[in-house]
Image 1 (cartoon, rainbow, N blue to C red):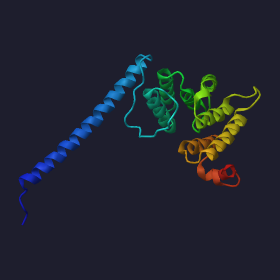
Image 2 (cartoon, rainbow, N blue to C red):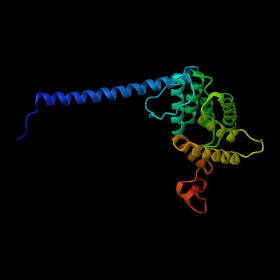
Image 3 (cartoon, rainbow, N blue to C red):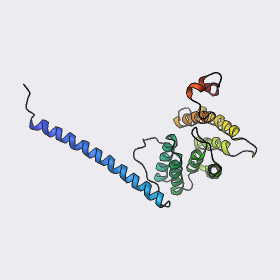
Image 4 (tube, rainbow, N blue to C red):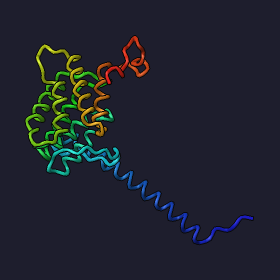
Length: 222
């Protein structure tokens, strides 16, 4: 025989429904607010890009006096890992606007402007990357040793002799990031960026193909 629901059971069920509704409504509202902020930024580029609340919690500490600059830097790095490079650049640019002395904000612009496994680097992206990494180097005097290592490594991707090929520059960057990763093995971003640098050496080649002897083994770089 089925028991009739008690008042307490009914109230608990109602409370759960209300909590679920409030959570859904809050999430939807934040999504719409972020969308409106993105539209506003597209219409008026001088307005700051939105700080999204649904991109995870990845945090990479940089030298900055601005909490907003740190937040925009973290968002930019999350977007780089999500392969949304144009949005990442907007976040890094806003980080630099919030703190013009933040060297890693310019490093971020240079990273996001570079080649990746989905697309080569255009001439416009190349000019932007060179300008950004030069600014990063100019503001690198007061940063941590780890930040300086990141900046020095990325410099090898963009700043060298004019006759250097893109392939040779990318190899130099990968080698430099291997050194950074070995210097800071507890820094997950160093490992991620090193791995990405290796992948960029052979774009559009699947993991299975990279493991074939005829293609060359990726772990020979490790």
